[in-house]
Length: 507
Ligand SMILES: [Zn+2]
Image (cartoon, rainbow, N blue to C red; front, side):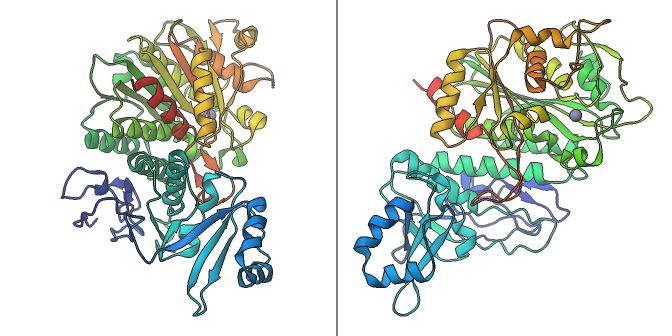
C-alpha cells in the first residue's frame, strides 16, 4: 500500500481505503491528524483524488434543485431556449433526474436536478458520478440543515466499492461548499457512512472478526480512544459464554471488542453493535437464498462504529463506550446445537431453539455488561431479524425503546435528518412466546408471529431496568441503487442518532 503524502484540508476526506489485497485499511497521511488525513483509495492504491469539496471556484457551474412544481414556475421565467431544451429532453424534474443546460458554445451553463420535494437531501446525490468531473455549486437558498445534508449527499454520491472489480476510475464532480454548511458534521457523516459501506461490502473472507477488530482499532487510534479485546477461550474466563458459544465453531476466534473514549466524569453513552461477520445459520443452516447476503450480518457493528466516529469527531461531552461482539456463526464438531442450554453472563439460562437466532445471543451478554456501569443511554444496532424487514421493508429500520422521551427524540431527529426509522412496540405480553420447558427462556418463539418484537423482548431481559435503551433492527443494505446510494452495504439510523445525541449532550 502506498501512503498519502499530500495534505490539503477537506480534500477527499473519507476514512477507509483498500489495500492491494482488497482489505479495508485506514490510511493516515503524515501531515497531521486532521480530517483530511483519510482518503478512500481506488483499486487498492492511493490516488490523489479530485477534491470533493472546495472553498470557492469562480468557474463553478450552478446546480438548481427543482421538484415538479417548482420546475413549472422556473420554466415560466426561464426563456424559450431553456423551455425548449427541457422539452426536447423530456425533463420533468423526476427525482434523481438531471438536465444539463448548455451555453451557446456547448459548455454547461447550469444543471437542473430533479427532487422528490423541497429539501430532498438526495436530489444531488447522483450528480458527482453522473457528471464525473468539473466543479459545481448549488444555487438554491438552503437552511443550515439543508446545506449540510446536501453536502453530505454529494460526498456520499462519490462513493463506489470497486476494490475487487478493477472497473472503477474514481471520477466524480466536485462541489463548492454550500453556504451555511456545518462542514465538520458533513465530513464526519461522509467518512462514517463510507466506512460503514466499506466494512459491510468487504466479503467475509477479508472481513472476519480479526479484521473487524483492526478496523475498530484504527478508528480508536485516530481519536485517542483505548481499546481492548477478549478473544477465544478468554471469553469463558471473562464470563461471556454466549459470545463464545456462537463463535467457537469458526476457524476465526470469536472476540469482544471494547472501545472507551472521553472524560469519565461525563454522561456515559454506550453503543453496542452486532458483529456476525458471516452467518451460515449454524447447525440450523440457512437455505442458499437466506445465506446470500450474510456478509452483511456485521452491519450493526459497522453502523455503531460509524456513529462512534461521529461522536468522537464532534467531541461530544460524553464518556463513550463501543462494545462489539465479533464472531462467525459457523459449523464444526463443537458447534452449539439446538436444545443446548447456555447460562448467560447475567445468570439467566437460555435454551437454543434455533442456532440461527445467534445475534440476540451475542448481544445479550454484552448488554448485561453494558448495563453493569449504569450508563445514561445504551443504543444497540443489529441486522437482527427478517421479521423486521417483512414488517417495514429494507429502508425503515425498526426502533424499539424502553424510554418514550428517548424514542420520540430519536424519531424526530431521524425524520429531520432524512434517515428514517419506525418505532415498534416492546409488547410485554409476548414475552411468553419465549418460554422454555427447561430454561429461563428460549432464544426463539416456536411460532411465525412477531419475530422482530420477540427478538427485542429477548434483548430487553438483559438491560437493567431504569437504564434508557434503544434497539435498532436494521437491514444495513441497499437492495437497489438510488442517487447517492449504490447497491450494497449502507449506513442507517446513525445520522439521525447523531443529531439526537448532539441535542441530548450539548448544553
Ligand atoms: Zn442468524
